[in-house]
Image (cartoon, rainbow, N blue to C red; front, top):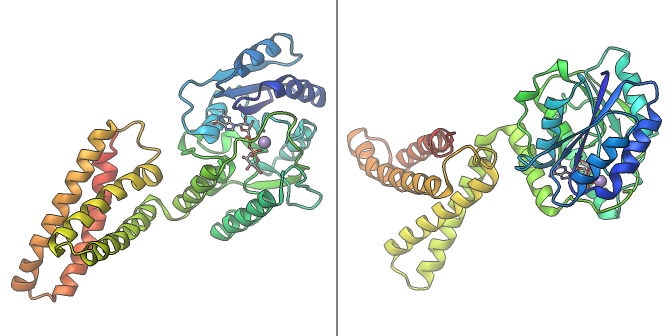
Amino acid sequence: MQVTVVVPTYNEAPNVAELVRRVAAATPSLDLEILFVDDSTDDTPRVIEQVAETAPIPVRMLHREDSVGGLSGAVVAGLQAAHADVCIVMDGDLQHPPEDIVNLVARHARGDVDVVVASRYTENGENGGLSNALRVFVSQASTNLTKALFPKKLKNVTDPMTGFFLVDRTAFDVNDLKPRGFKILLEILARESLRVAEIPFSFQSRHAGESKASLAQGLSFLTQLFALRFGRMSLFAVIGALGAVANVVIMWMLVHTGVNYMVAAIISAEVTIIGNFVLQERFVFHDMKEQASAIWSRFVKSFGFNNAEAAVRIAILPIMVEALHISSVMATAITLVVAFFVRFAFHKFVVYAP
Ligand code: GDD
Ligand code: MN
C-alpha cells in the first residue's frame, strides 16, 4: 500500500459513493486505500459498507462510537489506523477534488518534504467553495491571525487551515498530537518541526449535505490557537483574570444595592469560583475531562481547593506583614502570584488527573 486517503465523515451518506468513484478514477496508477473515519449518527456507515463491497479500490471504515476529539480526533485515529505511511487527509463532501490527490503524491515523491498542503491561497489556488462573504472573511482573518502567531513554522504555508493535505507518518509521532476542534493541520504544523511544501487547489462547493462548521467551532478554534501558542497555563490565566474582574463588578453591584460588604465579598468570591470552574471545564481542561474523575468530584475538588486557598492566602498576609515586614500591597501581590501557580498545578495534577 503506497497511500491511505483518510476521510473523516459526519453524516455524509449522499457523498460517499461519488467520492469513492472519483478517487478511484483519478488514481489508476496508485496503490491506494480509502479509510473512512466515521462519527455519523445517520446511515452513513451502512452506505460506506455497501460502497466498499463493489468499490474498485480497497475501502475501509473505522466507525467511532465515542467521537473523541471531533474532526481532529477522527483524522488522528485515521492516521493511526492507516495501512500506508503516506496519508492524505481530505473531506468527505467533495469540496476537495480527488483529482488533486496525484499532485499531492507527486510533490511528496520529490523526497524533500514531510507535509504537502493543498492550498486555496497560493498562486493558482481558489476559494470558490466558501458559501458566503462572511465565511470568506472569517477564513482569511483567521488565516492571518494564525500566521502572525506562528511566523516561523508557517512561513511557507499560505493555508494552515485547509483540510486537504498529505502527511508522511514516518516524520513524526502521531501519538504526540492532541487533537481537538476542526484544525488538525495547524496542530501538526505548530507542534512538530516538519518540512512543508504547497500545491494549489480549487476549493469546490459541497456535493451534497451541509457544513458542520459552527460558531462554537470558531470559538474553540481561537482557544486551540491560544493554547498551542501560549500553553494551557495562559488560558487558565486569562480566565482567572476575567474572574477577578467579575469578582469586583459583582461586589460593586451588591454593595450598591445595600448588601453588607463582608457578605458581598463572600457572595462575589463564591460566584466567581463557580464561574471559573465552568469556563475552565469548557476551555482549559476540556481535553482532560474524559480521563479524569466525574464532574461532581472535579467540582468538589476545585471548589474546595479554591476556598481553602483563599482562606490560607488571607491568613498568611498578617504573618508576612508583621513578621517579615513586607508591605501589605507587596504581600498581597506575592500571595496572588504564588496562589496562581499552585492553583494551576492543583487543577492540572489533581482535579483533572487521569
Ligand atoms: N469523523 C468526523 N467527526 N468527521 C467530521 C466531524 C466529526 O465530528 N465534523 C465534521 N466532519 C467531517 C465532515 O463530514 C466532512 O467530511 C469534513 O469533516 C469537513 O466538514 P464540513 O462540515 O464539510 O466542514 P467545512 O467544509 O465547513 O470545513 C472544511 O473546510 C475548512 C476550510 O474552509 C474543513 O476541511 C476544515 O478543516 C477546513 O478548515
Ligand atoms: Mn465541507
